Image (cartoon, rainbow, N blue to C red; front, side, top):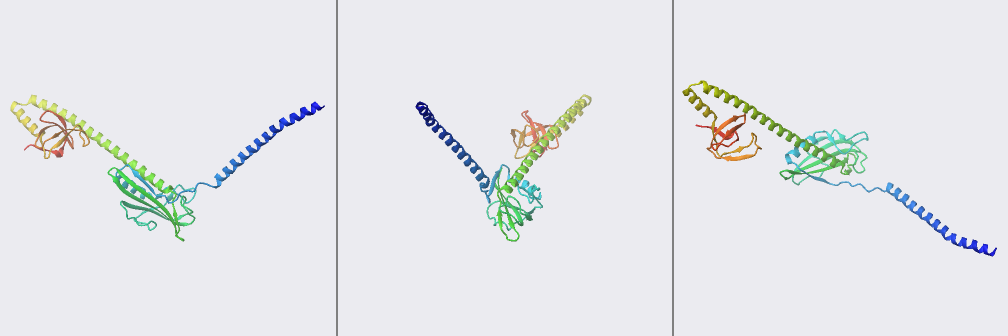
Length: 306
């Protein structure tokens, strides 16, 4: 019996630390769970503060003229993007361009200034603590940086009519209005590209038609030469030569590889150089130079022989 008691005592001593470790583990797990739940609740009730009144400025890779054209379309679309009055709305409607706005301090810096204003707005979203009726205004400042780059600054503010409390924007209106301007700049660039391509195709078609006409004239001339007398033929040739020979005007001209201004320059023709017209289009001559080189010159750069 004594041996049995000692054996049970040893087993109790050996199992006690195990029980304590298991309890400690449970308390540790409970502690971690409590910390995780506390952190989760804190994150839900303590959000990162939203930034208000941050100035928006960006650089657009387009000439100032294109940016102003795009901005004019934005100013007259009667919409202020990036805000709304009611949850069902997508933007603020009934906005109008304005020559100025007293809601902003006077701008004395460089560039051109434009405004878009909507009055009687009811608590627009994305403005700090806006909960009344007032005026929403957007200011756009356009400034040339380089010939092909333009700086655009946009600011938005909401001011209550009754208390005249100023509510700064969180940047949503500025970002949305900029994107609208950028989209319209891209559309203008696409229109220009398509117009240039269309003009090039038109010039190429005119050149093709002129080639066909020249071939027909050559065939008619060959027939006339075969049927006419020697004197008539010589007179006819002189007349034709006078019609097709030209002289380059001062200060000279560039011989182009194709009938449009952006075509590659083949060589410079000196003023007074004589050329022969091979092809005639409404704006361009396909010519042969005195040294036998072929190319294109604009009608305005040559004159008839005296």
